[in-house]
Image (cartoon, rainbow, N blue to C red; front, side):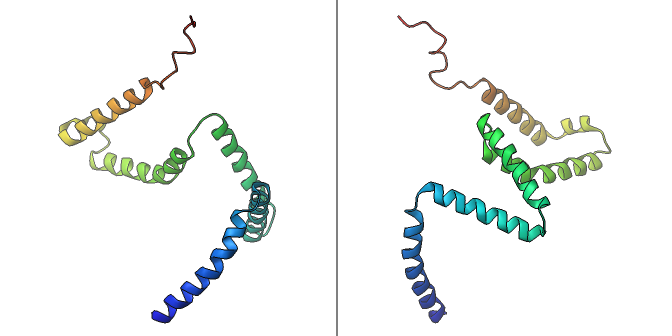
Length: 139
């Protein structure tokens, strides 16, 4: 364990000097290198151009989503929690024999639903500061 830590320290010291030079490179070189590595990695993993085409399609979708103001973090959370949410709903429906109105028999579930509706309504009506300033005439 001690030897592993010394080797890790030695590799870290050498790697630190290399990464400082990599970070100080212009962004155009870093982005083009990352894009090249993505192309090579995807084409090697799928052994064809189909994976590269899928990667480019999702890159365009991601660019469009970010240009229209959608948050990438929310998309990632939805992507990972979506299937789990579907499974939970299916399990809940199976436990309640397909009758969603039985959820009102559980006070904790009702409280969580009410808090969900309130939070969605609050986020939809929340305005950013200075939003009304553009609509009002100056002077």
